Length: 366
Image (cartoon, rainbow, N blue to C red):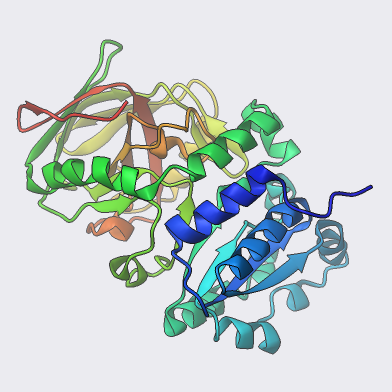
């Protein structure tokens, strides 16, 4: 017989997201977007929403039905902005999104022209969400999928378990660790990153505001283009770097993940504020393709991120949130408050490196 009620783990997860992260209040309206594989989690979220005396609405999509429409080339219907869904969105306080179709490799194979049609509703969605002032989260528990697990070389069940545990880390705990790191990044002028495996890189800080990714959507977040939805699990402090200062080398000891693959063995070498050499042992095509088309600023320092979440370890597409992770990017940093408007952004991640700001050690978690 099919299971009809949420498990204890699903219930605990749902309650943590609703109370700690989204701080759902009595009387609020909550939309939960769930696909076939995520229905047990959507059920738990709906049940816990009602226990908080709020009102849930589950938007359900069957993955097989969706791909049947894709195969039938019903792109205009898939990419439309339906009035009844938009009417509900316009009356929503909280939105929970568990990603889209799980087979990202199949989606990528459609090509950019078809994908743009199929996701044609996206700009209107964000415009409406910003207008009504909703807050919400994308839950990464919706990302694990067999084809992706195979590409990344991870066990899908272990990946999922890690995401559940990491999502339930208390945002107050993350905030307490994040604040002193953010202050140091905002006040400093130079940051140096070193390890015993070839990393020795100095970057510039420009007294820019550091962004805390601790699992809550703030008023400041909602002022950003896509800031009304955060990603859970959370756990990072990010800052836009001085685009003119970078000297030395950083050697990655974590992969750089994307929707359809990963790059491993990454090395960035900077001289006088520019990326003069980059290398990946495997998966270099994922970096090189975008870098070639990146335009002005593609080789300039972008952003720096410090990871905080103790429950993440080499987690696909959350590499900068792992506790002790130091991520350095090149290219666009406008989304973090910088001036680099390049069409490209590429990263490398080092976990366990020592960090100094203006000659003083920065105490990192982990």
